[in-house]
Structure formats: C-alpha cells, structure tokens
Image (cartoon, rainbow, N blue to C red):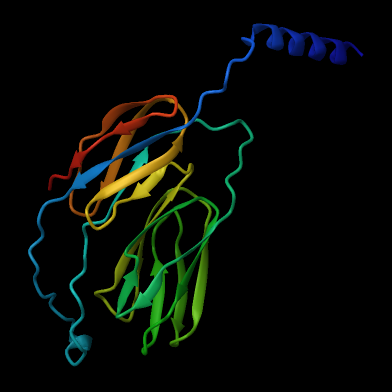
Length: 221
C-alpha cells in the first residue's frame, strides 16, 4: 500500500508540473548534400584466376552514410527487427553500401549465372555463407552495431559494406549526394559521415520542433 501511495503522489506531482494544453515536441528533419572527390575510372587488374573472365563494370564508390553519433532512446526501447537485401548481380553487390539497424536480417540472393560466395571476417559479425548456385539465397542476422566489409571468395573484385546502427537516425546518399533523416527528436547532435573515399568534418547541429536542419559536407581524401 505504501508503494501505491508513493506512486500516486508522484503521478499527481507530474500532472501538476505539466502546463495545461502543452503539446509534446514534434520531430524534425535533417537534410543536405555530401560532395565527394572525383574518382578516375580505371580498369581493375584481374587476378590470375580471372584472366579469361568477362570484364566487369566500374564500381561506384560515391555512396555515403550520414548519421547521428548518438541519439536519445528510452530506457527499455527496442528496435523493430527488419529485413534488408543485398543482391549479387553482374558480379557486384547491389547495393554496395547498405545501412541497417541492429537485429536486421539481410538476404544475399544470387541473381547471376555463376556461383557466388558471401563472407566477412569482421569482428563485429564474421560469417561465411559458402558457395551457392544461381537462384539460391543466403541470409545473415546483424545483431551488433559496426561496419562490416563483405566479400566474395570467388570474385576478388566483389566487395560491399553493411553499416549497422543502434538507432534509426541515418541515411544513405542518393545519386546526387543528397540525404534526408526524418523523425529526429528536437535536440543538439553531432552529425557524421562515412565514406569509402575519405573523411568529412563532423558537424554540431540543432534540430528544432518540426523544423528542417540543413547540413552539407565535403569528403576529403
């Protein structure tokens, strides 16, 4: 009974301190553009085992991931498990850069006419799906945040990245380098950029109630 009485008093106090008619702060958005250095298009040197293979397309390394260094979470908040996909097509991983939340299962379907293998030696999540035929699929669950490089042990030119986050406040840039992160609670944050091509200076930003915060970046080698 004592616990019930104490809880009731605390609840009444909280109600008295809350302004009548006050609306809860509404989430805002962060958007902008990430400029990357020009990359000269050069034909990769094939390995000995690939001398008779057909030439493959140039790899686009311009995709970047923009994300909050940390984000507010409830004490017992739990991210909804998701499902994502990274195809093997034209002897490339598509998309080359995949950003997900922890707990997401990623499918790696083989859409080529040749065998493929998907593996990673990353400490965060090491795995090896073995070699599997066209039309087959392998899946991996990523439970811990981190950056996981992905490879194919049959085709040395195939590589990709899976970035796993502990919060949902991130975005992958589009063909023009633009990004948008929605539903961000109002507050002050550090905004970071991950890129294969170099580094960008972190930015301190403020997200206002229902506002849009602009933040552009330049990746330097």
